[in-house]
Length: 297
Image (cartoon, rainbow, N blue to C red; front, side):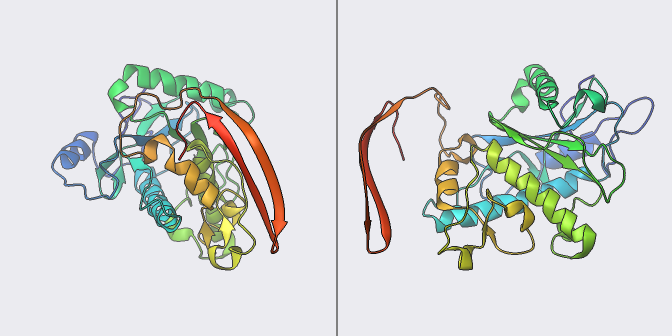
């Protein structure tokens, strides 16, 4: 059974969501709350989904914890985009207020065995697509962050669900200590917070079109580790940044856009017509010409 727009749901057998407020109260509060988030006017926003197999429990307070994590990442991305010359652009989020994201709760049709790490993302995505077909106004872009509660109940050993990016969707997990307050505190709880929160933001980068890359060696002393490199092991512990390549990619991502377009991710072709390289003053210089069927920026 698919849940309606996600702010809380319960079954007749057990409570699926730990929540401090009812769905009605949250919606009512949102309707009367002024949102001042810098990117609230982005026409496209990341769809954040909490997907729960029918034999797995949701993790208490997931809305508040995930909202804090993603709002922090939103600001971190903006700081990096600004440094790279794109202005304070970041991905849009569908907000109920300045501290709470609208998260779509979907109760999975099947148990966790249908949605394993290896090969399970397709079954999850099919149910997410079905949900948005039934709730088209809830879909704010082509980009999805799909978060699934850990299949292992031991908080020291979370794992089980898909955790990677595929196209414009990405998958991450939730567990009891997935909390921004645990970043940088040290010990096993702090380390795992970096691995799983940093991992979530790394996979989000993939879901927003970025590929793996590493920080330029000469920039590493100030910019630290590239998020899309091994930043999932440094996030919240030491400086973790977007590279110029990642920032340029995000600048062309739908959810970073400030304008509405009808041709997002339409096919295009490009051809390199000339290419040359040289090594001058200890620098590798590559130049060339190309043609393309779409503008490049």
